[in-house]
View 1 (cartoon, helix red, strand yellow):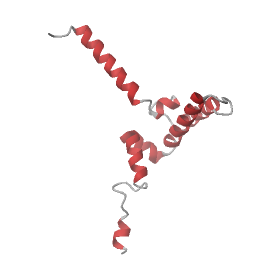
View 2: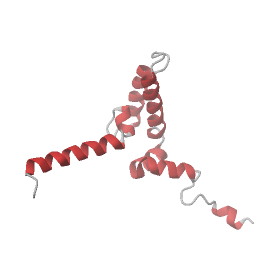
View 3: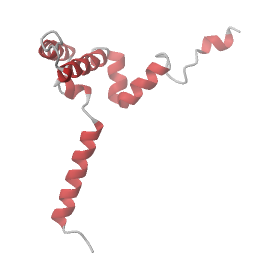
View 4: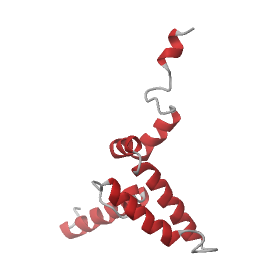
Length: 117
């Protein structure tokens, strides 16, 4: 038995919404800037949001503290051209792998160490 087209479309919409919700927000979403935002736009957005959610302005508000931490993480990545490039290409997983390899890329092996022994 085939599903009517309207039900199938609804299921696809619901599934795509669930995937977006599970995946979480991108750093661009957190700072409320477009993916192609300039460094200045990112800096302005960061300052505005950091002031709004700063723990000193929201004492005891755990949600504001979490947002402030997310805003700082997003700014740390998007304000660094190397990290931003990795994030744009490979997402958060790419950043984790880059950090795990000590920023050297590849498998975390320094080629000079191999030949200096």
